[in-house]
Amino acid sequence: DGGITQSPKYLFRKEGQNVTLSCEQNLNHDAMYWYRQDPGQGLRLIYYSQIVNDFQKGDIAEGYSVSREKKESFPLTVTSAQKNPTAFYLCASTGQGSVNQPQHFGDGTRLSIL
Amino acid sequence: GDSVTQMEGPVTLSEEAFLTINCTYTATGYPSLFWYVQYPGEGLQLLLKATKADDKESNKGFEATYRKETTSFHLEKGSVQVSDSAVYFCALSDRSGTGNQFYFGTGTSLTVIP
Image 1 (cartoon, one colour):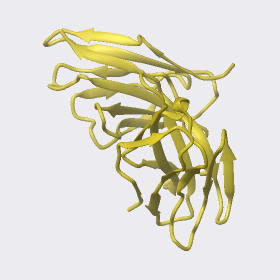
Image 2 (tube, rainbow over the protein chains, first blue to last red):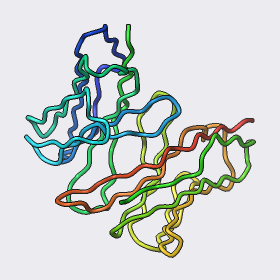
Image 3 (cartoon, each protein chain N blue to C red):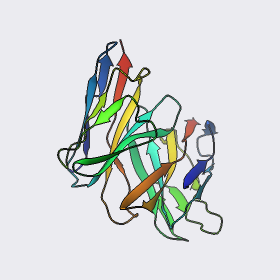
């Protein structure tokens, strides 16, 4: 079955450490997104990519970086510059073209500080 | 700019009660509208999708109608179950530049008690 795979499900970061969250999709979608979700909060857009080798900052990009070298993959790096990284991170993808196409989500990665 | 406003929670209902979660939107174009559901520790799952005015969509007992005149897409269910306890997100997709932009409401937490 097609879908989005996020790994790991749980991740711990030490102070001053960079960590990378994986997101892979086999839906043949062009666009991919990263969101941050804090407890009891909605989704905030970190970065998105509409095509390979191109990505755009979202509303809260500071302290994060991404790459889009392959259509299937959109990894997110949480850098040491992100002072409050503890959150639930969601990756999503969608086909391009019509606005009728919904976003499909992975099961998320929960990041905590040691 | 585009935005989605949905009813704030949390909402607590007894089993078999009627559910309404209000959602209104503002959009510059002609958006598609969505309802997503998020169970604890999981990603968002698509519940309903409507692409044009007066579309009435239903799934798993949930219904919503795309009302252009009132810019609304309220979620309803006639008889909720304990298993419906989750967070519900209203969202829209609108054309922006060469791609589609998604906008999410802040989510409404629903707890159904036996």
